Length: 152
Image (cartoon, rainbow, N blue to C red; front, side, top):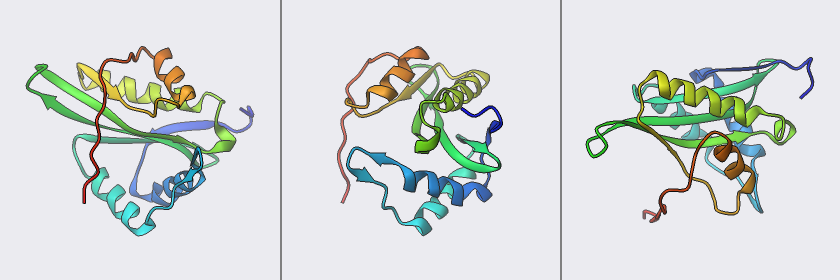
């Protein structure tokens, strides 16, 4: 990372929606590129930012959003403590492999610890080796199989 380009990780505000959308547009997952509905995404971000159990961090360089991570916390009556699930972690290609994902993940882990979360969960594609290495560096281990059903 260019030392002149200072990265700031902070909690997101609704003013970050355009920057988050730009990060999503830059994401290329294999052959797949985000082609979402920007209006829907902007509204969803604003709705989520108003939830008590939702946290979204952005990484900014020169006040431009270059990455983000978000998670939800919820009580688990089975575990007897609050749990958290990381939903998304995206970094623009120009800032990948420069420690930005680790900075964002560290921010979530610190916040989760401050909230007293008993567990923090994350899922990623099995072939996403870079993400799996990052999560392993922070103590995440493979525990369960995640099943998914698409809604109609």
